[in-house]
Image (tube, rainbow, N blue to C red):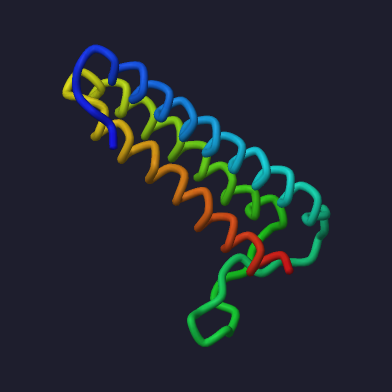
Length: 116
């Protein structure tokens, strides 16, 4: 458990840094996965499946890169807002950065489902 006080500030910052690095690594791996699986093509590609596994949306191949782009945006916004809220203590910042990390995982699952 993280304690409050002068010594705990370093612990909060280390945890924030580790979560940020993990989310950034997840986003990098998402970019790499999508780039390795997507090939330019004139044919439309599947962009979304319904919960019944039928095709819901099709489009151009480059639109598949919106998944890692949204992940990067999520990471940057959550980290920036987390830094602004850091003066209130470490918990709001940790929650935002943790949310960015979970978001990377959800986007990775979506990418695997689309590009399998």
